[in-house]
Image 1 (spheres, rainbow, N blue to C red):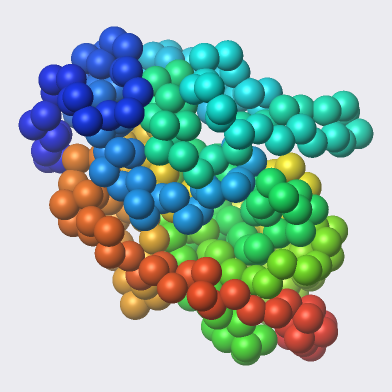
Image 2 (image 1 turned 45 degrees about the vertical axis):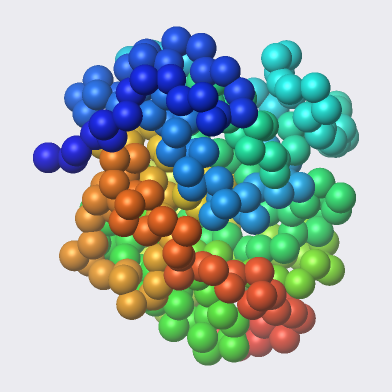
Length: 302
């Protein structure tokens, strides 16, 4: 059984006031809103590089597992004075997004009921120029073991292209594979690369992988989703807690840890800080940025 954190009373070291701190967000495990705030406060040095200067989409779940959630792109009222925002225009109009990177911003979002942290693949200063590629592996079977096996196929194919990659649990049933890249290509080029890559990989492994977005057509195969790379699309950040039973964390992994035997919920709100602390297999992620130009050409030969 997952053990819950012992600390439940207000903690004066937090830079924001947590209202209703004893509100239970995970009834089965007993985790509270304050437990969530304390987690993000403790893990923030590791989270910060992945939210700094990134546009955030808010998933607000004010009653935790007990209630409904809603998505919000527009910066909400009640953010700390001076919270950075960025206005972005698209075909639907303009949106004033919260920009991540501050501990106070992150904890205020927790206070507003944001459990997960959803980030763009680009920085606010260059919204159309991502600095990573993300592949979202969704097992139709619901079994993480299938996602793990698919992830190893993705890694092998990226290795063939000479591209370094980093896996993490999605915090749900799937696996995310990230590729750090140098800023340069437009988001449309990055998405085009991701689509070509997954299409060719699925064609090479038709019994195990698919790019068919229709659930009924997947027939138990793992869906390779490239669309997290589209403009204004988001993904759960590394170290993000998810609104799922057991309060799982989207945990950065070393490739050696990716195994059908791995149980993603073993990385959770109750044990993650003590288990991993500030150490992570992704500690050199941004030092491994690489040009995508060669891979864009080579992917045609997969």
